[in-house]
Length: 262
Image 1 (cartoon, rainbow, N blue to C red):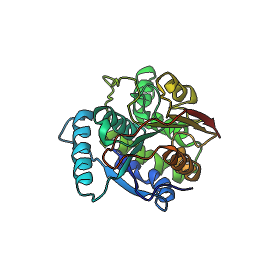
Image 2: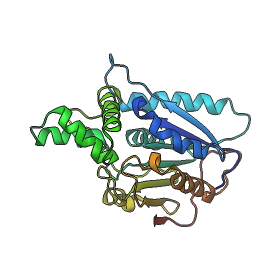
Image 3: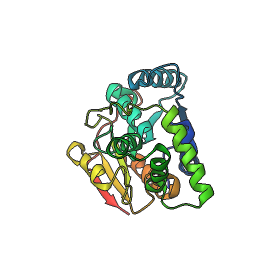
Image 4: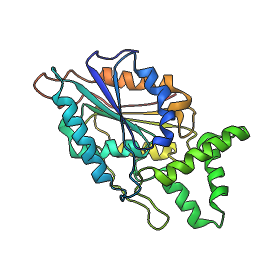
């Protein structure tokens, strides 16, 4: 693995109760790049707003880049709804983004485990505890009783307190489309929320410099279960990008897109 010493990755986290699932991947990346984590905590007294979250992220990125004595190559990355926030930011402020890496984000960006849960609530008469137990199996596979209960509590906290455009009354809709920045898409073959078909749906939006990779297993949080292969894909992607002019943060396209599995 390798990456430029000036490369900086900003990992977006809008789900504090699920933050621990990002740490193995960030630990794999840390020896090879500067790794920052931006965390958003939803205020229970304020409505969920993706636009306001993107504005807060922009304030942070602008202040950070202004403190740098030399140009930094800022790579945005995130999993699930956190990746969606990074996507919205890259669309709105492309000049600030060196590249974008989306982990577990389908071509329909609005589809998350939250929307999957609310859909099942609408289609069945099962109670919340029963459905949350089913979500644990869908997201993580079969677990010991203690692990199952711990994971269920984390999912319940995330459902109740994390940023989400969805509710039981109305699902959120987010427009499809790729940002101008080089894009890496990563999914897992056994993910039941964002399945390979959902990830492959990005194909019509891919640019020549973009990459798409499907891990053989790991379910929805495959970046936690198998952090080393995901880190390798990220670092290879960043290394494949052309150098950025010292006077510009905007990257140019590299010669070809790649799709791989395994």
